[in-house]
Length: 386
Image (cartoon, rainbow, N blue to C red; front, side, top):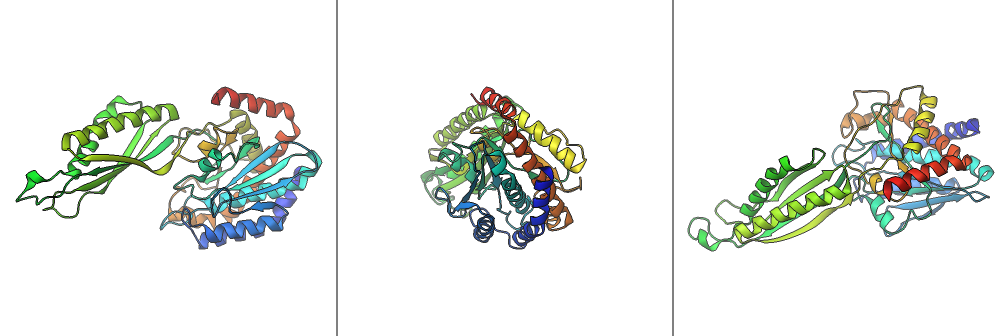
């Protein structure tokens, strides 16, 4: 059966690598992935998948399904395909989507024999609004048993944790006045923002070490001789666990209100991007994938620590999930760079699609064939989430 999966991947590899290169040459940023989604949807339909596009209100999202002749587990594979502004596919999403699709198509060649279903999710805007979280809120994962995806990296790293994240904007509304002739008539919204920053800096020594708070002044006025009647700041706040993130957010809201009270400005807050939950890796599932990846590539899989934030974290709160890194064979490569983007269109990218998809498909098949293994995965999930 391994040979059948491997042969299917090798048969489709050239075409999928061509797709990855087309995406590399036509990078589309979050929520603008028109060409990318059209290409992927068209390919999946040619491979016999039933594709819904748009999906759950997302114009460039999709859900592609293929059901076997017998009942069984529903395996979810995730496709990302948005690029970074100016850099292009410096996060390798052109490889992520093609590897997931290659795995889904290869698993399709065996699913009729062993039973089950394959579901591929097209998830736009990973770099901004995190559509995976929107899908979860709308019930997309209700019947999914495990969630799988890989991410390119310089070297292979086991699925680990990520930081829960919220993107919060604080807006202050004051009153303009001439800064020299009638300053007493003004309410300085920029002063409120500066007090906000100072207050947030003061709490950094009183939060846990996993917390990250970083922000900018998005609007600070229009001229030095005009008291600013509007100013705003945008922050990302992150923490290892969602529950503690909420506590830090409340501290920041109280500081923001204090800055408004001290200046007389009016405060409004909003989330300028959707929140990301912390990644809860299913270790049983992760061990199965790591073993398969090591068998496919012969390389050692490094153990991961805490990373940034990602919307696969949201998925991991709905269904057992992993998000491992598969190496491009160059430890000097760093994500979110033009050099990384260029590497995705070389032989390194082609090998990534082959290695990642083969490991994903083998992992899925092993779990489909072994109900007791899935029981262990599900038991771990229930312990960690509930």
